[in-house]
Structures are given as C-alpha cells and as structure tokens.
Length: 415
Image (tube, rainbow, N blue to C red; front, top):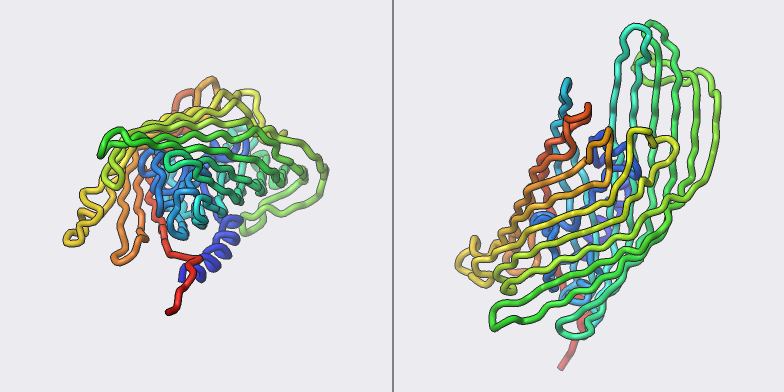
C-alpha cells in the first residue's frame, strides 16, 4: 500500500514544487528567497528540536538518524499559512497552501537510507508604489524558488552513536518582473529577470544518546553542511510595455536581452542540539544553528541599503506522551509537542535586522493498529519590523503531515 502512495506522492510533489507560491513575504526578494524548510512538522512543532534516534519518524536535517529506523517510513507534509503584513502606513493579508516535503526512509540493519524532495526556499511578492506628480509608478512581482532533492545514508557505529551523510542536488528558477511608468502615459519600461539555479552540496551528521540512569537518557545531534556553490544562469530582458484591457503587461518593443553566468557562494552551516528525557515518554532539548554571512544576491536583487550578517537560530522544545501503550485511552497515546524558536535571518535593511520568532505546538495522533501517525502542528510568529519604513509579518501556520510505516525486505519462511 505504501509503495503505491510513495509513487503517487512523488509525482504530485515533483509537479507542485514548481508551480506553488510558497510565500507572500516582500523579504523573499533578496537572495534565494524565503527559506521555508525548517524540518518535518514533528520537528517544527518542537521549535526545531530533533535529537532522539527515532525508529518510526524521519529526521530530514540529520542523516545519522536514518540508521535508527526499524520500519520503512514514508513522510509527507503540507501547510496552510495566513500572514498579515503591515507597515507604518498600509496593511495587507495573504494566504498560502503548500506541500513542504516528501521523503522515504529504508532500514538496512546497521545502515539506513533516506531520499526525498524538499521545496527549500520560495520567492513570492507583489509590490506596487504609486508616485505623485512627476514621480514614477513602479510594480514589482517575483515568483519561483529553490528545491532540494537528496539521498543519504546513516550507519550505527555503536548502539549509542550513529553517523551519516546526505548528497543534495539543489535546483530551481526565480523570476522577477519590474514595471515602471509615469502617470497619464500608458507605455512604460519592463525589466524581466530569470535565474536558473543548480548545484550540489553535502550534509554530514552525528547523533549520540546515553543512559543516565534506569529512566533518564541524554540525547544530542550535530550537523555540518559543507560550503558549496550554486551555478546561476541569468537572463535579463528590458522592453517597453503597457497594460492591456485585462491589466496584463503587453510587450511593445524589446530594448535589451542579455544572458550571463555566475556562481553564488552558499556558506557552511553548523547545528547542535542536546537534551534529556525518558524514551517514548518525554523529552526537553535546546538547539543552536549558525551559518556564515552571504548575500547570495544577483545583479537584479541587490540594493545599497541592504547588508548581510551571520545567520543564527535558537530553539527550545520537546514532547510528552502520557502512556504510549495505553490501549484503553487514545488521548494518553497522543504525543503532545511544544517549542519556541528565534532566528536572526542575516538580512539587514535600512540598518534594521530582519528577525523571525515563533511559538509552536503540535499533536502526534497514532493510527490504531499500526505504527503510523498523523501529525498536526500550529505556529504563531512574527518576522521583520515596521521600523525604518519596513514591513512586519504576523503569521499563523497550520501544518499536517503523515508518517506511514511498513515492514519491507522480510524473508518469508514456509514450513
């Protein structure tokens, strides 16, 4: 059954990842867009904490976790996001529904293998400025993003220590369309930029857990993503254009069409998390991630009022299960999750850092008679600020994921 679901879902996500608009943030104009991927929904519901060597859930951030899988695991997640955007003078509301990831994990003794597809970042903005008098009117539209296809393996060196590595292929396309015109003049100037991105990178991981006493255990996770390059094929087309009767841009005359190539440097990233807990009962952990400063900007989305600093992320979270084997009470078998995260995105505009913080909650709902479960997550947060003529985003996300488990590769015995 899972095999049929996997094939259908892979085809669906492959198509949808190119078509969906995963963000409505004006900050997605910069770099490779708004980085959406923050782990599976189980992890996100705990503020980003994933330190337990789980046997039935995939950890898409640390490949060492694949070695702990006991059953073939298929996971698929999607979200609904509602965002209120406000500045000192205006406000707007935007909603988005997205598919967030698809992955498969295969246990192979001391080894484990994982592979999947993740829409990693998204570009999606529509901004219009209206000039007064002789000032120009401008409209800015952008769409696209970066996707990540990965395959990795984990190996359990000892019952306490696992290591692993992922090979990631990053690919995507970003399109920006800028139109500038003067009041009472129907024809203006349109600049269309199209950027095709591609490149490989590696993610290395290790996980360690140790019994402190009969009940309590120590858990830890370490990640290192190696610095890499993204190949960028750029196309710039400048033309005179006008709005037709359907308010769509209609090209009048092409003035310039230029193609260039460049490499964007993706800095290395470190992530560490640790915590304590009782397996299948409760867990509490903290995490820290760090990435070097990099603009990853091309000629079309750089600006003199924008600088970049190091990215960092702080996480706190955990889970509680009243009684995982309480067959007489379904509520006691539910996993209750919660957490908090604070991110310095590394983007600075008008000398103001763009930070992102959120409170997260979640439920893990077991499917009776199986090891599979449905996970529901809630996230309420804030990104940006209204200071220095910027935009503040107040958002609420609802996410749903499926973690389906089945035993494969069993040698059947006949009497």
